[in-house]
Length: 353
Length: 146
Ligand SMILES: [Fe+2]
Image (cartoon, rainbow over all chains, first blue to last red; front, side):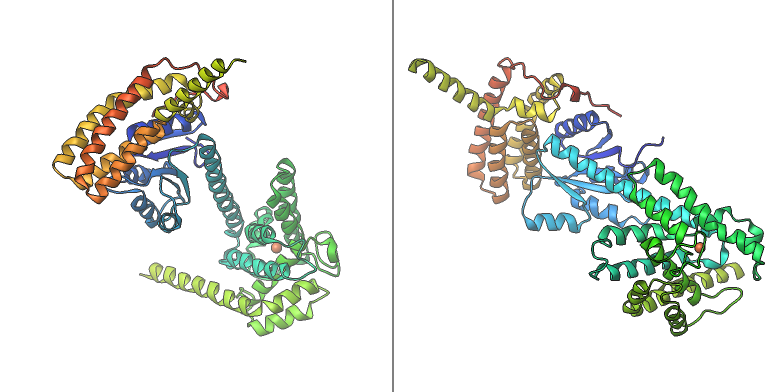
């Protein structure tokens, strides 16, 4: 059965009457409820994978609420489970102990029905956000999976984009535009920049040698395919701001600051800021990665190429942010390419066994 | 308005306030989103269970089973809080403290006063419930048991 994350609640309460009152209230709010009376029974239920939201009493015989939270956080598989502790305890040390065990929120006992409702909505919103983030990355992966040479590319792109956005948020010129939400959103949506590649034929996308001018023209359409697709979705869901940013990035990440890019030949500030950022991130990653047709350039060479493109290919402000974040770029590049390389060698070893 | 009238009004108000300390039906009804039938069912269940649990407290107190005593008293306190039986809740709070401190003399007295509070609760419980109008009748609902 497909129901939104968090609509099926597991209530863990050793007192049957309190459990029943809570269950009645949750049912009236529209939740499906399952009640168990101790932490061990809760763990068994959680193993079924049906529950994303758990409300647990703190003090229970056998495994208490703290022990249950710890067990939930120790799980290595499965989705994130949002846990709310019911407690009559107050005071900082108890709150610290609860949060430290992995609880996401608290509800004081006896509960107030309105507070309970609001806290459940927060839980659902957080679980839905997690689902959204995963969906976005899965979509991006789908497009990326057809381009075998760019493994790890998406993870690096989002890290580089975040570094640049964070740097710009500290400058007076961009402080009003680039805030925490912008940084989080570019981290989330930058992996979608090449989503339009799903519409490029294999013969062109996977061609090992250089593309002919005609083939390159086809390849260029990945920007408008991605942009138009995301635009259609964004128009239907006007409240989802991340879709607008995703569209801007997909459409304009190959535009150049001097207007010589594609698909629309936009220039300067007509190119959305998010796309100007991802443009540099994308090029830096292409330069520092190995391709069939080229070895990976070292950071210094890549840096040189980017500096030469300031004001023509790239927005000079973004280049400046890149220079200020240079060390972090080098670290990210090393870290993510190393983990990718070790994963590759592991896979090769297994394959050779 | 006569003085006599306002005196009787005052005593009515204070009687209501006392009763609310024993059992705050409005609070419970709100917690149960105005579901009157459910509230009555829960109160019946509480009354039925309480005596058995009180016997349990007496037995465990005789055998000085601190851990089990604490668990039982804590659970009863939670139930009392949830059904808005505030005086019973307060008494169980003292009882729980007395168990933790292992002050056995005062524990026996507290168990007696708990029994007394329960009798008081039953009295209030049996007085006909005023027809409380739920604040939002649309919120009425019956738990969907799995
Ligand atoms: Fe691209």
